[in-house]
Amino acid sequence: MKKSILTFSILFLAVTLFAKDSPDARKIIDKTYNKYISSEGIKLSFVFTTLNADGTEYDSQNGVASIKGDKFHIEMENMDVWFDGKTQWVLMKGIDEVNISNPSESELTSISPLALLGIYKDGYLLNAPLSKTINGKSVNQIEMTPVNGNREFKTISVFIDKSNDRLVQANFTMNNNMQTKIDITDYNDNYKFSDSTFVFDKKQFPNVEIVDLR
Image 1 (cartoon, helix red, strand yellow):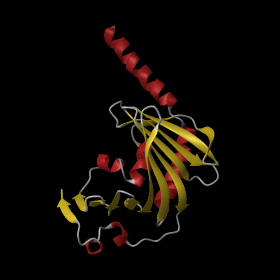
Image 2 (cartoon, rainbow, N blue to C red; image 1 turned 30 degrees about the vertical axis):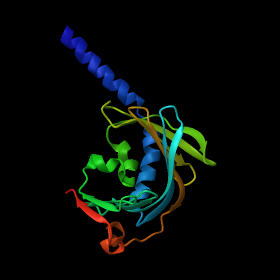
Image 3 (cartoon, rainbow, N blue to C red; image 1 turned 90 degrees about the vertical axis):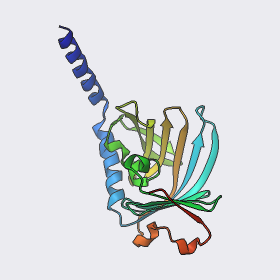
Image 4 (cartoon, rainbow, N blue to C red; image 1 turned 120 degrees about the vertical axis):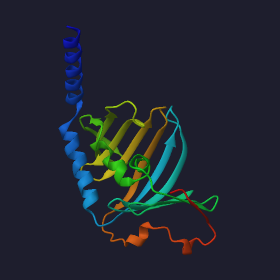
């Protein structure tokens, strides 16, 4: 009898979780993701904002991201990051140091534009889209929650432009309720980058210290 009750409870939980997932939301994000990965090159300007648990902003930085599939180069005020699909170089501008690593998939999630956008594909439930206005644009808001509570993010909200399926804003809430917000201020998907764009060139930074962590 106890086994039957336990089995029924597990099945009920599974059905409940599945019922919360929105096919409409997945269609919207799928369209955005597929446009993103099919482009030969994208250049984004963005504002990266960190917020306290109470929603108070305490740090904000402007940045530019050059993206080609899973390769990227991110330029920010305090660091630059290059990733060629295997190797990552992180230039810390304040101390003139470059760290070289081969990041894991989970490590890439925290910085790779492709990994961040594609995070919905595995282990997240999507709520039904809500109509909002963000940064003067009419958007679909889609909130994601992890199936497994051990995930890094407690919730993720993405805001997608209804007119062109482009990402306008993404909000990430950590398990400690700290938040980060990314606002896309400019989007151009007509670039054709050479692969060298995504590799650190020591000739351009002759005085930096190289720290190889591989």
